[in-house]
Image 1 (cartoon, helix red, strand yellow):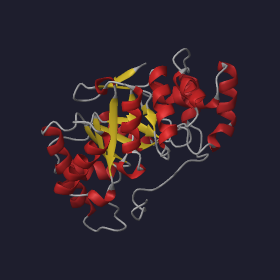
Image 2 (tube, helix red, strand yellow):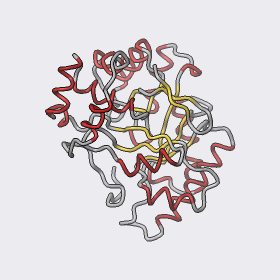
Image 3 (tube, helix red, strand yellow):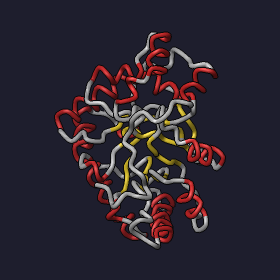
Image 4 (cartoon, helix red, strand yellow):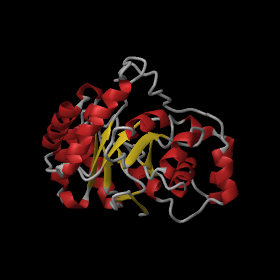
Length: 281
């Protein structure tokens, strides 16, 4: 498994297991156990996913040692602010039955559509995240769905900048402005919904490349993300897809093929705008 190194030296695998919408505990047990067998070590969850307890039970029942896993969690919008974010983290730690998180993220920035003081709210929440990191409750901290202007405002008051920015990123939605800003500022980009909403599976450029490489369209998408030095966290409830999502390290995309994928126009995605969202969820 390829890894990337965060600005604090911590290494994360480039492919992780997304758990959005996976709430059935029996299914979680099967998927997490199988994912571990296949080589997954990064598990991504969130308070808003309502599956933290299910994940902790799945890990315990599988007999997987805590130090063999990288657990990533996210604080929800109702817990913004210095004190609230720290309390939310401790609640998540209790649900996951662990003393620490490997990665803790702010799920959404405060929306400028709702809050004229959105920058101050984000700054206070981030100050609480910094405290969690300094206290050793989390090994790395970051954000989700932050655009460049969110990050630029955060930089004005932050002691440290986010180690990770998790954003929707896939062919047809390559987030070039955010991607370039993060690369230049040492922030690791993590691709949520790395396969979009499924519509990109019919894209002709991707279908032709998949045929040439004897791979699936999904594998071409994930390979594109890996070669851009992203972390991708595809979600699946199908055990057979777990292996397929890791079977991307035996081929490469050329510079021309990467460029062709970069140029694919929008062809489907989740597409929630963090400046427009009215407390999504």
